[in-house]
Figure 1 (cartoon, rainbow, N blue to C red):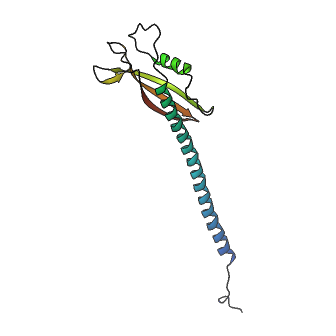
Figure 2: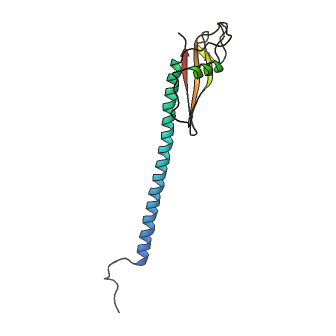
Figure 3: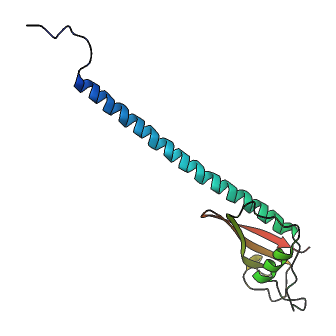
Length: 152
């Protein structure tokens, strides 16, 4: 009878266990890598949206002040007036690709009496200072900001 005590090497069971453990480690690393790639893609979209938002708001600051139609000099410009002014603005910023949409979503007017912004025009007429809420959307990621537009 031969003794197996002195033999070196791995048996079938040990080899299968080591292959199983190695496979589990590799699958775990692959899952982590996929999560990192997905996170990087999301961060890239958010960064593009933030960059577009900054360009959009800076362009709004330079577009000039809209005169509301039939205002008679006292009415405040509303959302449609700012949209029309933006559409007519020759040097306006253009989104770099078709997957980015930009919009002015709200207009608030400076209220000199309360020292804040509100959606209604103040009783004294146009204060010539407005808070615009703008939104940028890129592949489902939306970013918004507010920018003050003034005519003086």
